[in-house]
Image 1 (cartoon, one colour):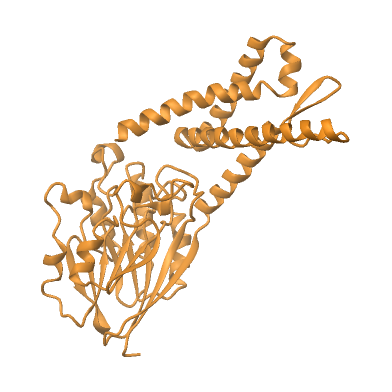
Image 2 (image 1 turned 45 degrees about the vertical axis):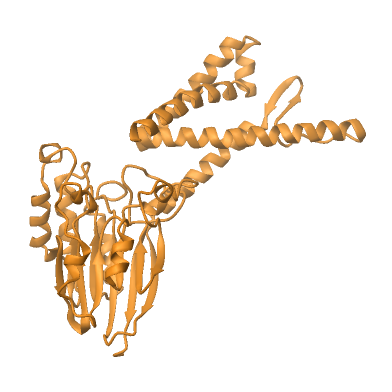
Length: 389
């Protein structure tokens, strides 16, 4: 499937470059320079596309540069379509009434074409991706309040996921977000996976763990693995292993839960799961086994990076499941692609199944992609209120 998607992406990119080259060739400056020679117009248009591709790639990286080009193709197609429709309407208006000024499409002044659709496409793309950059690099606060009839007290949870340290902030930059989390006065802080990835340097990993070590909470800081944390390319690639990450977290008073249960005060317990990727190797404990010794009156909170086991979790009656992984869908209009393909049970937000609440965060950062056009970067504050208040 991934090879098919990559093939479609490559095909779309090549087609997009050809299309954009023909569109850039419509601008008046290029038409003047080409002096009616079509092949020169196309070459100059291609040079413009390559300049945009190389400059965005240099600024944001190859993946993000390609993403910018694909967005430009989309908006240009839309603006071209609107321009053609507007042109037909203008033609009809001119046949039946006074002249109508050109606002979209191509108009002429002194024999030189003006390509408004292209100008609009460029402006809209820049504005749209600027908003996406802002939503990816400015972390928001998202809050939920959950009530339970169980005889437990209250608990303030702060959840983060998908920090992918080194992408939108460095290890030292992470400290700013930790300070914002501290200002929430949490009883517990939980990290639901993908804290680091293959591109996170050892220096950034260590600095980020030290930032977590500054947190002061009632019950501590807890971490569960995501699919990226142990690294796909081996410890030689990034300079440390999954075990090195665990050691650094523990050194900074972060408890690492790998299919383990921890009892907290006031009637709460925490269950940290191995990532779903471990189940493919037979290394993940089932939900039935994880809850078999729990008291029914305990309010159970599950940390599970990938939101993919909702039926089993609802069936055993856990109270709250916290996940990340989806990045909130990342890019509009493909936000719910994971659900459409059956990879995720939910993309973002709060859902209830039976007596179980499920929350999926869009994450505090991103993996590789520098834009969020379908969601925003966030940390999550969850206030659980029981009957003992």
